[in-house]
Amino acid sequence: MEEQDCEKESVKLASEEISHEFKTLVNSNDLQSLNHLQNTILGRLQDSNAVLSHFNEFSEHCYAEISGDLARNTRILKSIKTDLDYIFQKLRSMKSKILNTYPDAFPADSESEVVDRRPDLEIPK
Image (cartoon, rainbow, N blue to C red; front, side, top):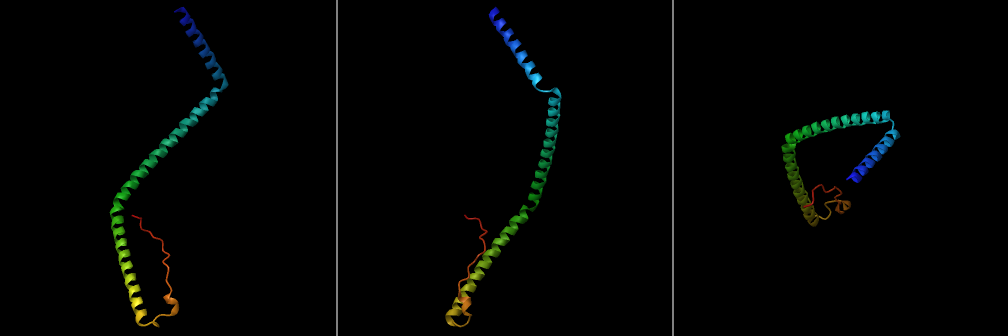
């Protein structure tokens, strides 16, 4: 038992010595300055977090207000695209029929295939 007490006492003395050595390595003014800077940064991060939370709530509210309009406008645009595709298909068909009936109806350069270079904005299914 006495041996354990002696060992604990030596560990305690060694710990105190190491603690004292660490304290002398760093200036207490530097530690206070570092602590102050960390608290300043923490305050700024908390403020930023509050601002971002408020912005997210505001954005969610705005999106909720306009999501119906966005959905409706998306449906309208898809309908317009379908209608235009149908119209252009009919125009190509009519032009083909006219060319078959009247080969000289269009200039020679209009017969070349027009390449559609518009990007496909539809999401692949």
